[in-house]
Image (cartoon, rainbow, N blue to C red):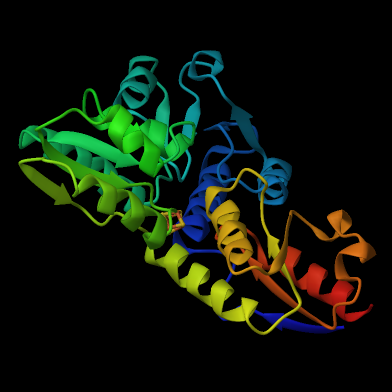
Length: 280
Ligand code: SF4
């Protein structure tokens, strides 16, 4: 089988930084002495790799022993979480991606300037849960339909978006917002170019292949978005975590397969997958 790879794929700088920060913290404080507040990134094989190196994980700050080292993951955390960690005398190791930090700062300053802050994003995603903690009463929407339902009328709106969303999705929602009688709309572009470049490369590859494989954690928002965009190109698309999830029926009648990987997918996962496909 012929295999073509997307020009831009795999680890982004934010994920590379987060892994490096975690590794350095384990080296400095010792195996078992650093606790990540939730998965460092949304990729089980990277999380397992860091656990083998000695990183512990907890979803609940209150269960982390006092004076331990708490690692804030690339998705960031709310100011309340950070304050509570300090109150409990935890040493904070901050692996929040700089672009997520920028979104947090923007939300804070929009609120200070008197805007009703609106975030376009998935309210259940940890990045969104963290970012909206930087201002009170942030409205979260993620579809055109929600514009009518959720936005307060005649206010000055300050808009940000989840870093991993596609420009097309955000533009669709913003287009609906500008049709309404808001006095002022201020849009900050908080989208991550690393993600946008991977999306463009994946869409470009769709036109050249019979089937697309998008590799990455099933909970990874940017990987899910890659798969959604490939499907929107009417290309048969599979979102898989690793080679073990592959089934030969997926490439029935296909001669050329395209492969891309989300921003939290390690190169070793991609290479193993490509070797498997090429051997067919
Ligand atoms: S995808 Fe972008 S925003 Fe998310 S961690 Fe990577 S660089 Fe940061």
